Each structure stands twice: as structure tokens, then as C-alpha cells.
Length: 200
Ligand SMILES: [Zn+2]
Picture 1 (tube, rainbow, N blue to C red):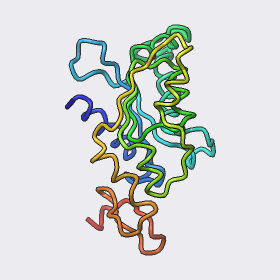
Picture 2: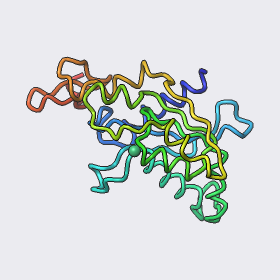
Picture 3: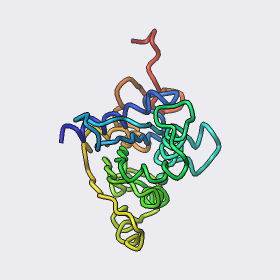
């Protein structure tokens, strides 16, 4: 369990590394890890965060961004792996995707198409909806049940470290909820934003 918690924390921390803020509005972070090697904790392959607002691409949710980033890393001719496209496709069967919130049906479908070995999420879609997020209400469990014709199988593990992932999603539509660590409410916009160094 501590291994799962370690990588779920890494998915949270991806926000501060790949976003301009540790508390972006769309606080969806992903870490992709290979647990099949000899390193007990696992080998981090790539990270991803929601990049809708950074890129203008509405499909770049954290999981899709991570799949893109991992593909780039796996096939980089100067990189660690130098895989052909076909070998990169097959490599996903050894990988575990950690995301700090349950995937929307688009991303859950992409996870099944990729054939990940495991998919681990923190905060549930139900929790997102209860806290004001617009969501397409199809659970990952439902997507997985409907994907049994695919040749791959993916283990689904939900609710991991939700006590630490939930705070990233509970402040956006509730102005009295405290901001995630390192952030404070802007009096002008009401949004959480990174505390500048000179304010610390
Ligand atoms: Zn999604």
C-alpha cells in the first residue's frame, strides 16, 4: 500500500512540476510507472497533467497527456528506451497509470485501448460531482465492464490515498474550503493560487 501511496503522491506533485501552479484549477495529475522491474518501488516512465488551458486542446486531460508523454519517451531515438512504435504499443501492458482522480469515460477508454497493466485512481467521479464538477457520469468500472472484447485486461484499483487527492478538487466550487498546500485564495478572483515566495 505504501508503494501505491508513493506514486499517488507523485501524481499530485506532477501538478507543481508541469503546471504553472501547485494548485491549478483543473488539478488532474497522472504518473505512469513500471512495476515489473527489479526496483521495488517501481520505475517512473512519465508524468502528465491536464493541459487544456495551456494548449487549447480540449482532449488533453492528464491521462491523455501522460499517454502522449510516455509514447514520446518510449520512442525517443536518443532516450532511455528507443522503442519502435510497435514495441511502444506493447510496452503499455507492463505499465501502471496512477491518476489523482477517477478518469472520465474518454480517458478510461484510452487506458483500456492502451492496455495498461493497472489503473489506480484517488478521488472518485462521485466525489467530483458532489463538489460541483461537471462530469460525464460513466464510471471507470462501467467502461471497463464494457471493454471485455479487448484482448488486453487492466486491473482497476480505486480510492487510493483519496484523503490526500480530494483536497485538490474540493476548493474550486466551495469558497470556504482551504486551498491545497502552497496556495492561498486570491481576494480578487476567489481562486486558489500559488503563494509567491515573498509572501512566505
Ligand atoms: Zn479525462
